[in-house]
Image 1 (cartoon, one colour):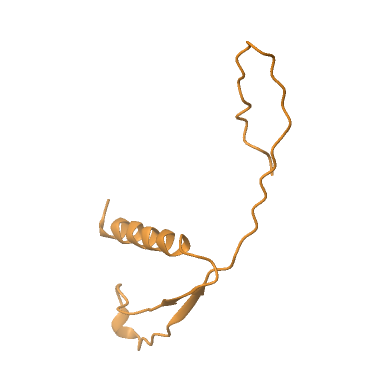
Image 2 (tube, rainbow, N blue to C red):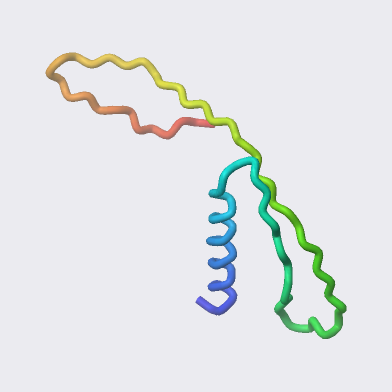
Length: 82
């Protein structure tokens, strides 16, 4: 994996870390130090941003099941469809 792959993995890890934070909070996004070829042809300006994490809904519904005494119960592990 080249240097770019390491940077992508680091970015992904940092993004996952940010998204795993608490909802309702704001986190700054600070841009700086562009890297790449041909950047001398441009005047680069940076504008910081903000990441706001909204609360998401989650509904867990249990299904009714029955079991006969003495018979091993094997749960259905089929992933639900969308």
